[in-house]
Image (tube, rainbow, N blue to C red; front, side):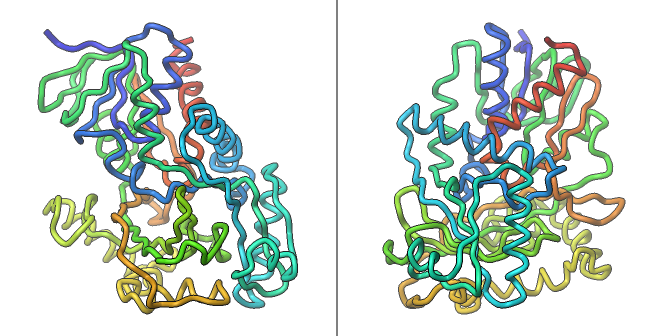
Length: 400
């Protein structure tokens, strides 16, 4: 007999789990099934990210990221405090490495003010009190609400507290669509409404429903390098990013247990789950993605050529460390240890413009909603963004 669901969610990362959580709060007793191809929740980006809860000041005021990050930070902070989950409320400083970056610090303050984020411009003297080992030119930006959590632990906690009407089907792969059901490698599942939160494969799943046709995934590999001196810094320490692309540059992260690491890289990957040299290799993905990246390299969209060269250089530890070294007064390169487990950023590309999609992106089809671009700060925004996703589906499909 075919399994039936009122709501079927593809993907048990933070977005899929948060949508399920939101649905249980609104539709008590509705049958919710989460389809997950891995054997555990948050196997990919949701469990491999830095765990930083962002404050919400990087994003333009008209964006979904700006709309949901500040609220998401508060909701996820409250969730961790309520349930006794580890959280490091250490705050963050953004510094200017040279005179050219001073205006960038001020622009971030303006964006934060428009987004309603608690921030403070500080001078070098105040910075020395807040973060003695940081260095800046003229000004820095202090964000007291930036924190760190254990992302895998948060996802596991959400999943373990679902009511009995929520079922997670692990090790079950989405294969396609049939009328009123989806096809999986272990039989079909019927549904009333579907939410696609498949991360790296969201565009592929969406294509079966006629959604997301102009988009494809361009994966970027993120690596962090551990530092063996927890006292190096008290807070997160970030540079001024290039606001024309979605990456925040190499920075220092203070982990939930107080450790220090630098990263991440944003190295173009050659297949969607290109975590190591050959693991999970997919020849079709390799051919499609390398062809797309070659085109971006030739056209040099969003300065991809320079990005690719600089990011590939970060495979050299010395170059990687040098990117972080300019942010601090003292650093011993010999105290860096191992790389952390790599992650892959599921970055969406608009194939009509050959530009990266900067904001969250949702598309709807007849009986489904597709979260096509949910990159950083999606973890921070997950609870508030899930409410928006369910609202938009409810309004469109009259689920209320």
